[in-house]
Amino acid sequence: MIHLVWSGLGFLVAVITFGCLITTEYLVEAAFHDDRYYQAHGWPKLVGFIVAAAFVWVVGRYVRGRQGKILIDPETGSEVVVGRDHTFFFIPVGYWPPILLILGMIFSFATD
Image (tube, rainbow, N blue to C red; front, side, top):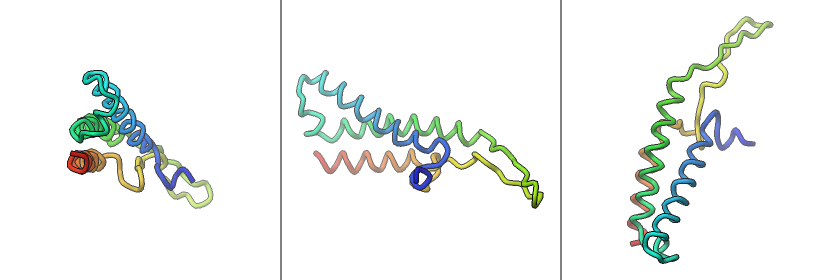
């Protein structure tokens, strides 16, 4: 069931994005001394998504450079590459930074 949502290190897209949005909410509410500021304004969400996109870009560069293991099936002699795909919702991690930026713009305009 888990592999339907992500493969490899793809789960980091969700972890990083969630962490960046929660951190942004905490920092903005602390800076403005208003517990509703984050919910009422779109720009903090855009900032959170931009930061998340930057971190996910770094992860994407890292996983693109990693090689998978090549295993040989003893019965057929064919090679199988294991551990090279890193996806989140079937989308490679390297494609997620622009998606996160678009989501940030959507949330920015939807709330302001």
